[in-house]
Each structure stands twice: as C-alpha cells, then as structure tokens.
Amino acid sequence: MPQATPADRNDVAQTGALAPAISLHEVTKHFYKRGTRITALSNVSLHIARGSFVSIVGPSGCGKSTILDLVVGTERPSSGSVYCGGETVSSLRVGTGYLTQHDTLLPWRSVEQNVRLPLDIKSGGLARLTGRTSDPAAAERVAWAINLVGLKGFEHHLPDELSGGMRKRAALAQTLVYAGETVLMDEPFGALDFQMRLLMQAELLQIWSTERRTIVFVTHDIEEAIVLSDEVVIMSRRPGRVRDIVPIDLPRPRDPVNARFDPRFHELYQRIWNQLDPPENAPPRTAAHNGLSARSARQ
Ligand code: ADP
Image (cartoon, rainbow, N blue to C red):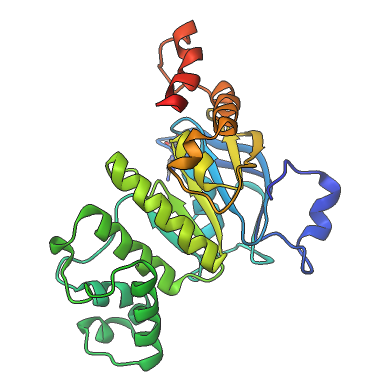
C-alpha cells in the first residue's frame, strides 16, 4: 500500500520480496515552457504495493499524469528517484502498460490486429504491421486478452463497428497483451457515459481480481476512485504534493454500484472531498459545496 515516505523504509524498500511495485522518493518535477519554469510535482514520495489498486485524485494540473509518465519512463524527475519493478526508472519501460482516455486503435485493423499491434512492434518492426505474421505464442496471448475483456466473437470487427464500451475493452486488451506486472491508467473511462463507466469499472475489477497486477489509476471522479481502489492518493493543487492517502476498507469483491450504497462509502467520499483543492479559478466554496459530498454520495 502506498505510504507517505518514512525515510527509513526507503533504503530497504527496493530489495527483497517486500519491495513495492512502484516507489517515488522525494520526487520534484519541473517543466520549462517558453522560459518559464513550471513545478508540476514537489517532493512527492509514494510506495505502491505489488498487486494493489491505487487511484490518484487531485485538481487538473496537479501532476497526476506526470506521475504516470515518470513511472513509465517518458519523463525523468528533476530531483528524487522513481523505482518500478525493483529498478530505477531511467528510460522508457516498454513492459509497463499504459492506458489513456483516448484509445489508439487503428481504424483499418481488426480488433485482433489492433490487440496484437504492440507484440508486432516489439517482435519485428514495420514488416509485421501488415497483419501477416503468424507467431503462435503471440496469437495465443492475443486470444487470451480478447477473451479476458469479453470480446470473443468480435475479433474481426473494425473499431468503427464497436460501441464506445467495446472500443475501450479492445484498448484494454491491447494494453494487457504487452503489460507486465504494472498497468497505469490515465482517466481511461473519462469519455464514456455514466452507465458504461459503471460497466467498465465492474469489468476492470473482475480482471484485476483474476490477474492481480498493480494498477495505478488516475481519475477526477472520487466515486470511481473509491469503488475501485485499495487506497486513494489525494494530491494538492500544483505544485502537486501528496496531501493524504486514504485506505479504502470497503469489502471485496466489490460491485461498483452496490458499493456506492455502503454507509462507509459516504464517509470515505466526505473525507476525500474535504481535502480536495478546488480547480484553479473555481468560485469559493460555500456551505452548499460542503454539503455536496453527502448529496453526491446519495445519488
Ligand atoms: P494532471 O494530470 O494532474 O492534470 P499534468 O501532470 O498533466 O497534470 O500536468 C501538471 C502540470 O505540468 C501542468 O501545469 C501542465 O501544464 C504541466 N506540464 C505537463 N507536461 C508538460 C510538458 N511536457 N511541458 C510543459 N508543461 C507540462
């Protein structure tokens, strides 16, 4: 489970069976834009246990996506260090799954060919992107991923022939097919309508409980964070810092709809909401805002 860093744990944390899947140690990240320095993250420390499901919430621009970019290795910390799978992250980690809000399905490739794309790229470069490859191990893995997300029978459909939820499932299969132990998700269900989101949350929980990979899930949606997670990391507004880490003690297995009716869900919602900074330029909080959590949780 992630914890605000006790410094003495850091040194031992990277070795042995107890090593967390992901660790950030006193990470600060600056970006430079037209000569101006933007501090996205300031002194962030976080430990995420293997096989756990951890969500990160916070106002826009507080550095949530930057954390994922640091873990996958597309960005480097300005200071501090990032570990994943027991190693310092020093370059792109191709085995770390990364699913974003906008899927990258190619319209001219079938579901099966899209899901296989990362394996084609990994194994042979452009010649294999024609869809003519027949590696039996790859074919088996692709079939496994398609089955896992419930798209068996739709292998030969093109993305345009799928509903929003099915496209999202195909994108999830495409991620799972190459991902090792760690999967990063950046608002993956943000573009779906509410009902489809609930279905995808249920689907994801089912897959996670079978697979037990480590999932780090960025979302704006407190309810989504609570129903999915073992712990919710609350970030302050930019420069992002870890404000609190809330353990989610709702029983598992969880149904994402029924979990919302658990009285404990309301308490957790209130605790997270009360610590969440409003977005930049938001009107000041009023008594009505403060009552929002209880109301939202009841809806
Ligand atoms: P969040 O995911 O919480 O919305 P981000 O991690 O995307 O926040 O961004 C944090 C801050 O860093 C924002 O102010 C954003 O504009 C800035 N930022 C992120 N990536 C870059 C970049 N490549 N260049 C310049 N600024 C960036």
